[in-house]
Length: 351
Image 1: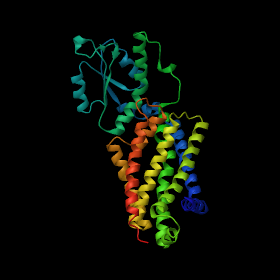
Image 2: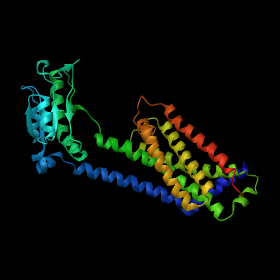
Image 3: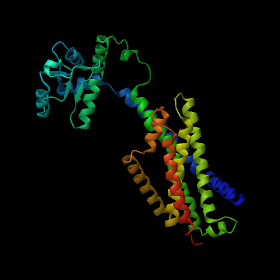
Image 4: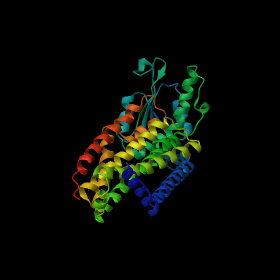
């Protein structure tokens, strides 16, 4: 155990002397500051009324609604061009011919083949073009009038709650904090830790110091494990510091224990994968290249399998009731498999 701790202490001292970890922390601070500034700038520049004044003439919304429905009037007050239709089929025909930009299908009485109200719930269907740019623009323009229309429907049904009564931060800021900023800060130490593992191991091969390390009562697996543990210690310190700082800045984070554990597990996965590449290739440049490819492949595969650590962390942070610690432990299974593979591969080292 003493040789193991000696290697851990040696690795931590080496990182601090090279200022690598300090640069990584400053880089994270830069990312957080730049992202926050970018968000503030985008929110301050965003103005849907400006969009209408500059390009609202071509935004034509087809509305399928009853004659006494106020939806058309609400949209017209917003500044968009409203084209009424008697049936959804007529509106769809005009939509596919490019005469209108979108369709808002509001419930009509059953005699007009409309959807009506089901169980007191009014269902409004919005048909948008395939173009993501145009769709986003139309959604921004329609957001406020549709909120007003919903307030009208609430009043008609005796519901006293309106959008103006709701308090809290804008949804855009909420999504940015929990879907972008928090994952970046919590997982960036893991990505840097993998790179540090490669540098540490390949340096031993390039300088022919592996045999010197193994001359102590320390096995190959113990030497590799000590280097991974040193990286995990750095990740623990950074992740813990970010959680504390975010909390002090008024950002409410739920399930902090599971989030901290998830960040630690992901750091273990990246460090173990990087160490595996370094042991098999024994070359810094090739190992770093393969490590980058593994990160990209892991991100793609996790997204396809709906097992993304970023999504899991975001849902944990907002307190998703349909998520539990078992979702975090699934990543621990991946870490266990990678470590067993590393344990077998490290025994092939020639000293």
